[in-house]
Every structure is written in structure tokens, then in C-alpha cells.
Length: 324
Image (cartoon, rainbow, N blue to C red):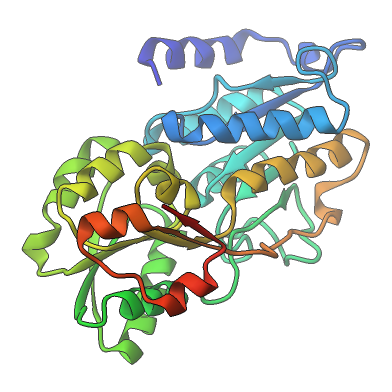
């Protein structure tokens, strides 16, 4: 985020009267809070389309505020506080760190997750069936995805003995994912090597250092920063010529090897249903938090050939999409 613009909207948040938030005849405002980047443009579009499909004309029936999206994790807390002060009607968040920042900023404004880790572990909901507070929406937890991704890696690259796991260490959900990878790796006799990336500026250098860890492959955890900076991640990974398993099909559509994950873009379309219900009077604590019902296995054969990897027929037959 442009630093001047960030300071400007924070200053504005102190001066906007609370009454302006819900004046009669003024459309409700929906604040978006997550990592801004080229890789998240489609998510904003999917959410807008989801609202349009439910009869909301942007700017007339509802105002969708993008100006609170951030470019660094360190900016999430102040952006969330600014959203609370401006008293938007609903805050839509993407990612565990964002939902925790929003929840810390307000226990009153409804918060709807487009995708995040386990909300009970994060301390923002009592249960998935009855959240009980001001947080609801969609969670990305769905069985043992870490184990399935490691099994896929072993299936396409049987000789792998050490694999790097890329994560942002400041996220409790990403740390949980790392532990899940470690647990699954024991049975497969694979050593997991964490590679920490704390900011977009570290992406290239951190990935370039993977061979120095002795890793023969790479796995990602679900990270809003990684999704926002997909192009940087993919460019850096392409230089290594190592197999990698991703957590979002968009990576594979843009040149990654393989992904096993929920369809993140569709989650943003679905989250509009929660916002619609809240705008019509539903309490977020009464709306069950949903888990993904469908997971996608997507394979890029063009990338496989470039890496000199033959994808087993057993994997191709299970794939939901094969890009060639």
C-alpha cells in the first residue's frame, strides 16, 4: 500500500463522524481486509460478482471499500482499527492473520471470512456450527490436506527425501500447517525443512536459498501473501527447477506444477451469500462456518515437461483439471 495513502485513510478514520456510517438512504459499506497484490485482483472481482448476483449494485445498494487492503502484515492491525472506527457495516477478511486483526479491533462489527484457518483454534469462534460471536464465513480447513500434498509429492517424485515448506512464520495457522506437514512426513520418510518468508521483499532470496537446505522439492502452506505475490513466487521457483506443490489452483494456471486445494476464487463468490444474510438482519454468530465441500487437483503438464518430470497416470486420472 502506498504509505501516504495508508496514513491518509487512517487520519480520515479519526475525523469521519460515526453517524455517517449508517445514515438513512446511504448504502451500507463493506470493508475488505487482506493482502493487496496482483494475485488478489480476481478475488475482489469474484466478491463483487457474488454481490451482483444477489441483486446488489455496487455504489448504489452497497459500497465495497478496497482502500483498507494492505501490502505488509504489519499494516493489518491499523487497517482493521480504521475499519472499526469508520463503522463499516461488514468486514470481509481473507486469511487467518487478517481475521485475528479484525477480531481484535472489534467484537461488534460483523466479520465474514472468505477463507482462513481453523476459527476455533484462532480464538474467533466457539464452534463451526455455532460461532457465537461476530465472526462467520468460510474456513479453508478440510481434512489432512498437508498429508495429501506430501503423498502427491512422493507419488510424482518417489526419490524425494527432503522437502522445503514455505511459510510466513508470524501466522499461527501457517505454523499449524508446518506441524501437519512434519507429522505426515514421518510416515513417508521425508524430512521437512521450513523456509520462512516474512515479507514480499524476501520472496526471491528465500526461495533461491532452498537448494542450500538440501531440499529436493518444495511445498507451500496457504498464505495470503503468497497468493498476492504469486508471480514473484513462481518466477523464483522456476529458476530452481524443483517440483513444487501449491495450495491454490491459480498457481498452476500461471505456471506452477501441481495444486491440491479448495477453489479460493469460488470461496470469494460464495462469501457474498453471508454478507447478504447479514445485511438482511442475520447475526453472524448464528450463521454456521462452512468448510470446503470440493477440493481441486490441478496439474500443469507443460510445466512438468519443462522440469523433466513424468506425472504418473494414477495422478492424471484423479486430476480435476489438466493444463497442457
